[in-house]
Amino acid sequence: MKSWEQAFKDGLVSGSIASMASTAVLTMRGVREADTPYGPTNATSQWVYGEQAAYHDEPSLSHTVIGYGIHHASVTLWAVLYEKWFSEHADRMDLAGFGKAVAGGAATAAMACFVDYRMTPRRLRPGFEKRVSRVSLFMTYASFGAGLLVRGMVKAAASVPRNSSGFQPARHAGAPEHAAPRTGSATYDR
Image (cartoon, rainbow, N blue to C red; front, side, top):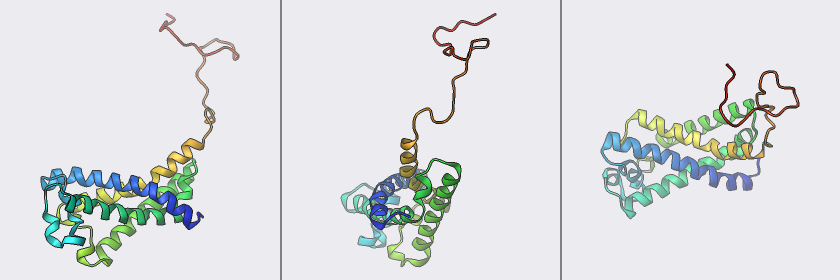
C-alpha cells in the first residue's frame, strides 16, 4: 500500500483528471438540461453564497471559479483516498489489477456520492442536483470514478517495455521464418 505522502502526490494528478472529466460531463449535461454550461459548476458556489448561487447561469469569478475550485478540492480529497486504497491495482498492467482498479474507482465515486447527498448538510452539497437530472448525476460520478484510473493506467502503460506483448508481425505465406515481413507497395498475388 502507498504511503500517505505518495497517495497525496498521486492524488493531485488523479484528482485533477477526475475533476476535469466530471466537470466536462456537468458542462455537457448543463447545456442539455439547464440551457447553460456554467449552471452546474456555479451551483457548488452555494458553499459561499447560499442557495441562490445554484441558479446563477453566467460565467463569473465569484460563481464559476469558486464553484470549480470547491469541486476540484473535493474530488482531489477523494482521489487521495483512492490512491491510498486502490491505485496500486491500476499501476499494474494486468487484467486482475485493472478489474480491481475499476472496482476501486467505482467504490470511491459511490462513497463520494453517498457522503455528498446523505451525510453532508444541504448547503455543503455539490448543488449539481439543482441543475441536472439524476441520470446526469450518475454520469458525473461515473466519469469521476473513471478519471481516477487514468494516472495509474498511464504509469502502467509507460512501464511496459515495447514489443513485450508477444505480438509478432504476420509473415507472408511461404516466406522462411527468418525473412522480414512484407511491407511497401500493395501488390497482391492472383
